[in-house]
Length: 209
Image (cartoon, rainbow, N blue to C red; front, side, top):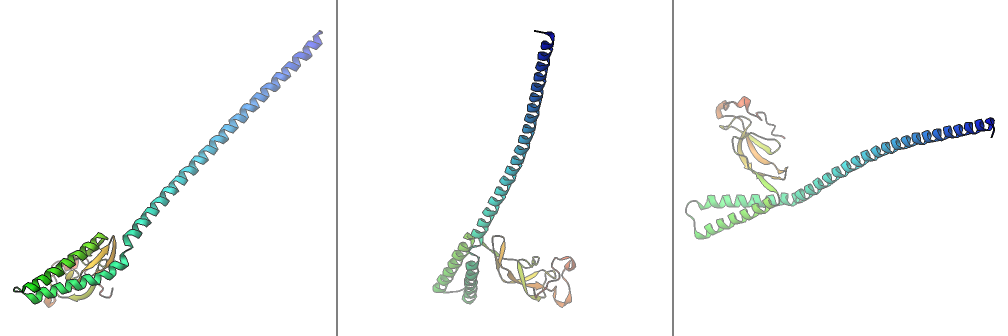
């Protein structure tokens, strides 16, 4: 074989080796690009999964809250109707006690005890369904969210506070089913203000509210 033929073969081998190296480099570059692309796609999928999981958890919590509120307040309308019965029982009991006085017959005692028992059973039934009384006391702060001012009268209590309770209220869960009807203090008789009247919360009460 001549020297020229050897040179040609060497050049061919070098060219082939160079092409092979370029192919390997190109394949390596493509592999790196593919890896980076796959990693980016994986990050995107991971982010989507986390968002979907968060949305699913929020949806679950909202559904649980709605079910709880629906169950809790489902009896609101019925409970509101029953409050009239509770009021009548309370009035009947108060009237019977006032009429009976200290000395009363066995029949009147039995009647009073029967009405008391009926009232207790009714209150227990209301409590079992989440209905609780709002029973403010004279001297307490007037709360327009829980109390309804029906009158304003002179009293020994600070102006703007509760002077007397005319009808108890009720709540169901966290909602007011019926506000307690109260009379609001206008201060002491004779135009004298109760102590700290200016500092008493609710000192100015809108009776039209």
